[in-house]
Image (cartoon, rainbow, N blue to C red; front, side):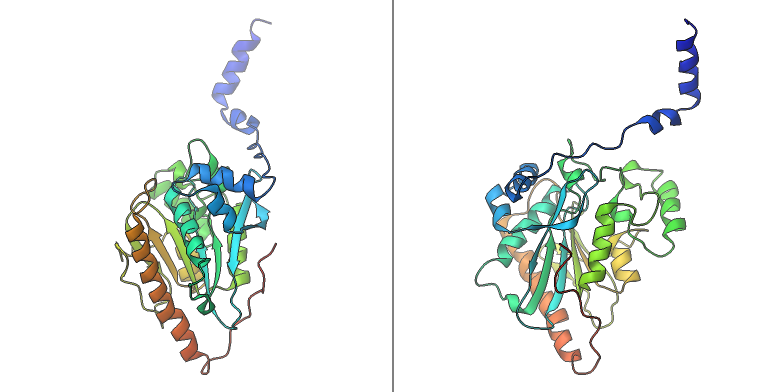
Length: 310
C-alpha cells in the first residue's frame, strides 16, 4: 500500500494531460435575474458608468449566452425610414479592455438623446461581447474557455493560418489562443451569425489601448477615415481569425476599429465628443450619402431580418 503514492506520482508526472483532462469545465455564472442585476455586475467592473445608465439603455438579451451562462445584451435603434444605413457597434470583445465597454455605454446615452438625428442610421449596439472575461477577477482578454474571441472568427484558411500564427508569431501566447476551430465559442459564433442576419453597412469595433484608428475592408466607394478625434489612422494589418479580417476582407464589410489610449482610464469628455462628431460625419458621408447616390443605380442587396434573434 505504501508504494501506491509513488506510483501515482510517477503516472501524473509522466502524463500531465491526465491532470488537464480531469479539470472541471468552467462553472456557470450566477444567473442575472433581471436587467438591473446584469447592469450592477457589469458597471461595477468598468469606469465611469453607473447602473442607472446601463438600465436606461434598455438592453435586451440575445438568444445565446456566454460560456459561463451570462447574458450577452444588445440595444437596437431602428428608424422609421426604410433603407437606413446599418451600423453594428461591438465593445468588450476583450474582457480586460474596460474602457471599450464604457465608451459603448456612453454612445448608447448619446443615441437616446432627443436631439440625435437618428433616422439616418439603423444601429445595433453590443456593449460587451465577452462578459465572462470582463467579470473575471482580474478581468481577462480571453473568454472562459481561454480563447481570444478576436482570433476565433472564420477567416480564410483559418485552420492552417490561425494555429500557425499563434504558435510561431505569438510563441503560444495564452492571451491570443485562437481556439480549436473557427467560431468555436458561443460569443464569436453569435456575432458571426448576427452579422449574417443584420447585414451591416459598417462594423465599429471598440478596443484599447493602442491609441490609433484602424480600418479594414473594401476601399471602393468608402473613404478610409483619417482620424476620429485624437485617434489617427494607422492600418496595423489583419490577423487570422480577427473581426477586421473576417468582416473587412472575407465579408466585404468596412470594419472601423477604435483603439482607445487606455484600457482602464477613460478619455476626457472633450475627447469623447470629438471622436463621436468625427465618426458621425464619416458615417453620414460614406453611408447615408453613398447609399442615396447608389440606390437608383444598383439592385438592393439582401434584406436584413427586421429584428435580431431574441
